[in-house]
Image (cartoon, rainbow, N blue to C red; front, side):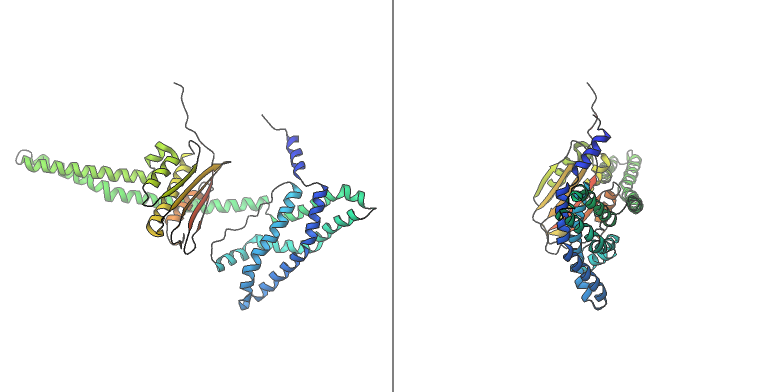
Length: 389
């Protein structure tokens, strides 16, 4: 069943705030005028005082408060326009100074400072005019017909300043894809080198030993049958070891349990091998796209491996939920914390795997715990094809 364009337009219009709601938002704008002015003054003074370190401390508190205040106005504008206004802030790396540097250099922070100048002057005048039109007996009819367009006009300016445009979003997307592609290419090359090294040092060496033992046994069959038999037994043992190492290499490329049982079953198998209790919360479709399943499987495996080696945890929880075309996952442990994803290659590697599918990963690990590795990957469910009997 298709949807008529007229119906889409009508629903968008209905989602916008009515005249009374628009007037209420105008009142809220006026009430927030003083906090906006104070925040602007504090940001300006803090920036000036950065040279004496006092400004650093002030900015560390003022910038988050500014984001919260601007977030209220961003919500008001979204209600007036009947559409969400995203806030594409740069992700915070963690740590007081690093977070402060990220906020200070974020282009959206500078947009918010520019927006406060607008909100303290023309924006405030627009909201105040909406209230004046309501209170005037002669201007009341103008308010009745004009408050909605007037407040939406202010919301359009708010949206233009507080969000990035389509061109900027595309530029950010291209930049992110370029960076993730470079990381994925490097990671893939490293994986190929690892596989080559594993095959050369393990199965290849053992198979060469098997060939040598069988050749010697062939030479000894006539003169020393017992020695030939011992060499054959050694070759059998060596071939079994080579087969096991080959299985380990294959499992590192694409685990058989993942192909047989899907992501949920493969994660459950990982949980069984953990030395501590694992709480599973899995809400998954029958199957997901195979590349996504593989990336998420290795994400869980790497997170559990880090927990077992470094966390000293007594309990682990794994959560995987798929809804609305988005797979959300989380591995949480109650260990000692203090994990740093930049200190090793494991978490960086799985972040690169997820980035290849437009996925994101974050790590929260304060000293003392808990450690939480969470991720989101856009993907649709994929059920295996069935053939009629």
